[in-house]
Image (tube, rainbow, N blue to C red; front, side, top):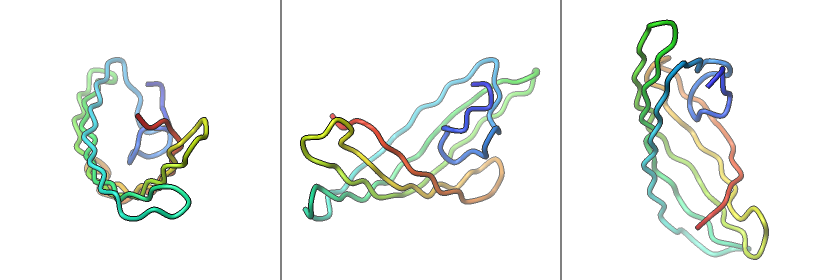
Length: 100
């Protein structure tokens, strides 16, 4: 990873890895339609990585909101709050991405 800041729930420059695996399970519940579709998200990020012969495993559960825009190139924007099990802290993050 090389200190990737984009890993949801992990501290900035906190994930250095020689080998890594990350899996995300996410469930969205549509809430209402106002300028696009708003949804409540529940998720868990599960990962394992190795850095300097030290293995780290984690499960970062969280929740957030998604707003799916219509007819634009980047249709999904969101805000997440994630509990980091390695550091024992709660972190917020924002996202912009694609929706299927």
